[in-house]
Amino acid sequence: MNKFFLYLMIGCSVISAEYIRDDSIGVVTDRQNGLMWQDNSTAATDKVSWYKAVERCEVLKLGGYDDWRLPERDELDSLADENRFKHGIYPVFENVGSGGYWSKTVDPIHHDRAWMTLYTCGGGYWYGKYIRGFVRCVRDMQSFEK
Image 1 (tube, rainbow, N blue to C red):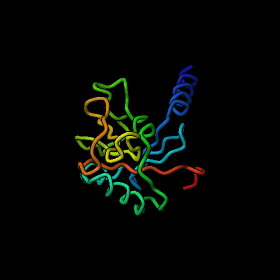
Image 2 (tube, rainbow, N blue to C red; image 1 turned 180 degrees about the horizontal axis):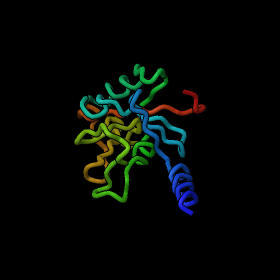
Image 3 (cartoon, rainbow, N blue to C red; image 1 turned 135 degrees about the vertical axis):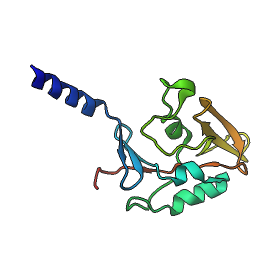
Image 4 (cartoon, one colour; image 1 turned 120 degrees about the vertical axis):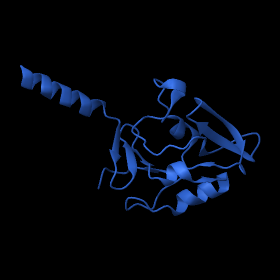
């Protein structure tokens, strides 16, 4: 009986695990959406303009990959844990800055603004691209190699 309960618990935790953290390379894998997220110390310390954020992701080499990009608004917003106070980011992410994170999504009316997600206050807003924000790059998972 105890072994059955243990196997049931292990099976349920594996099935429900959407995010898997790999401390050795500083990334979090989102298995449900097929995305790999940057989660090294830089994701919580460096604030740059939108232009610099796009460039940082384009040149990022992390975990043996060089195909990183700035996430779209919906991808970045998907990391908001609505069960936490003010919709904080999922706790699997350990490197989280206090402030907004840039998305690649540009305001369709005012092209000099882009979407910034603010996990600390549960939302986001269109900000001028010159404002400094945090960067959390993402890459598409073609397969689960590595």
